[in-house]
Image (cartoon, rainbow, N blue to C red; front, side, top):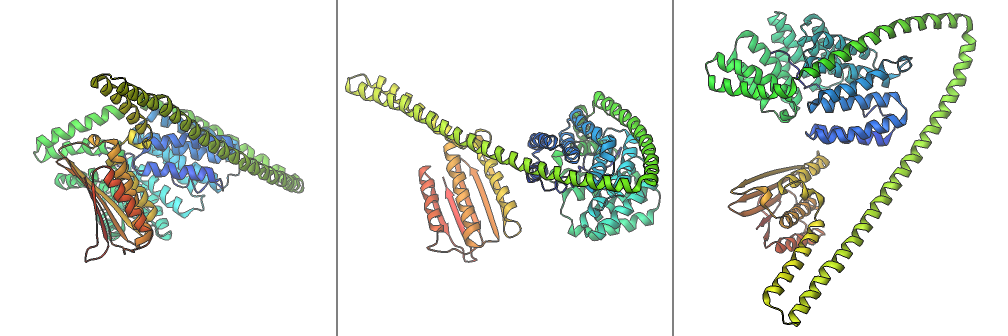
Length: 579
């Protein structure tokens, strides 16, 4: 295995928490990270641009470094390496400035360490191992100064894994040991699990089999408590590497299959390339040449997409540029420390007085800036609300004009044609024109999501959102299947009513039944659609829930469907729609 990490270690940690009280930035960071975590990384990039704009406007360099670092992560996940390099480049311009590093606070220290470790992972992805090792050690040195025990554990673990991929096993083992001990202190089982997996790999590559087995035993002890696909990926990759080194290709294939079946693996193209690039060798070694050839083809497709020479050249240029700047900065800081020492010896009292004055001025400036930001955000919200209302009003006027000038005139023409004795064919043509106008207007009133997504996708997105909001009190799941047709074939009008029925049924179950589990199932077979929403809660006859059930029945009738409400002996309620 050429390297173990691929693009697994995406570090957007600590960015939101470091936004010191800026609610707008905190919200946007949460949105971007949520989109990225569910695989909608292209949308996360769009939000990332808004984060960068706000960070630049704030004139806070720590916010800006956090924003560029996060955007680099999202872009790298999409394989847009040149753009990721540009984002990291902007962050490094700030990080390597003397002003930023002059007495950095904890937020600045954490962001410097995060940026360097992100760059180290990208270096390793592009096979620039010397640069990857250097940036990993930069990150390790900076995070030593951090008070955040979780961040120390994470960055030590990632730095150790990068150094493992670079072949620096002794230093890597030291970092993994630090990562493991910090994770246990923070009671972070997943971080401890990852560190133990990398330590197992380091020990095996160093030839210390007993130590490798000890770390493997620690991983297996922690595994029942591990739910994160990313943490499991680390362990599976380590076992793959060890199996390949030992020539145990069947065991390696087993772990490669586990990796390729992990949730979210489609969003990690470097990991997929690494798996296919090794799977074809393992299949060939056991004589299964058909699967070997299939794996080789998949690996080549990914390689053509990711491995472009210009990307590696851009990365090298970035490394040379900032390596030189690091040296210059170190010399400048050394001179500044000597000058500061002399000034302190001869003018201690004067410096204390100046510092007190500067502190008072700085505090006042910060208060004024905070008030200005609050006023600006208030104006922004007011402008957005006004524009939204104006948009609705303009749309209402446009639809009124459509109905008056279009549909009403068509109806008048139909009336006149009937009264004037025109032929049935002419009257039918006018009626068809009117029908098309009404149909077009009704489609414009449809929710915008049905213009870009199928019924299955819209319901899945809705259920996932409800499930996230209801955790841990209620578990909400969704399952679907379709045979003999496509989701795109379901008319928008039918899709809308079914979607509203799901919304009403799930909302009733969450609000009124006290259910702990809610299951939504949608099936289309042989042109017949069946929807069921099942909960294990308590049905309250006579409550507001009855209004919701009436609404469900009316919507079902509108599309020619039938709704049944049953209460199994085991408890709960089942809402079933057949159409």
